[in-house]
Length: 195
Image 1 (cartoon, rainbow, N blue to C red):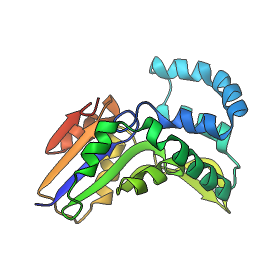
Image 2 (image 1 turned 180 degrees about the vertical axis):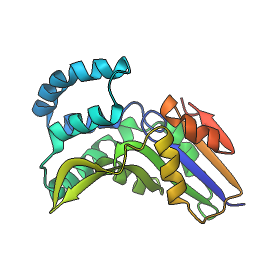
Image 3 (image 1 turned 30 degrees about the horizontal axis):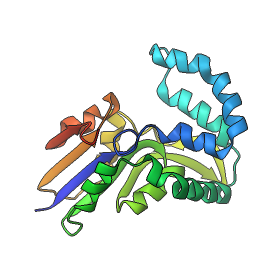
């Protein structure tokens, strides 16, 4: 029986959000300053008066835009090594350890950027389906390739990833409204399963 597992990352497999954690880790002083500058946008976001993708791009770009790819890769590896055991939910790790890797495929489906999420996907034996940061001439432009991988876009990205493949069962795990489309589409959708 061939199974496909689709796991949301932030909040589902981890305690909390990795974006703020990584950006703060990358440049604490710049993070504090840009966080304060973005508070009005975060408020508009909460009131649903601003687009998530625009605010996210602005905030991520304000800290990482212009950074060399090699430095991003180096820092994201150090971040992974330091935080993996601190932020992963133990019962999620226990569940993942019991997968039959022969007959299952697992996707880490996240709105987080590939810049810092890829090490987690590799460690967890998953293929990464994420928001992708644009690198040009070895430098992060501050833009995304395609859209923010959240909500309906998550499902579009999953379908693109598994095109032409057949599964007997699709099982998805999520913890927010951004996972709703994915959970509804799966044969089995689990909400806050590891909480």
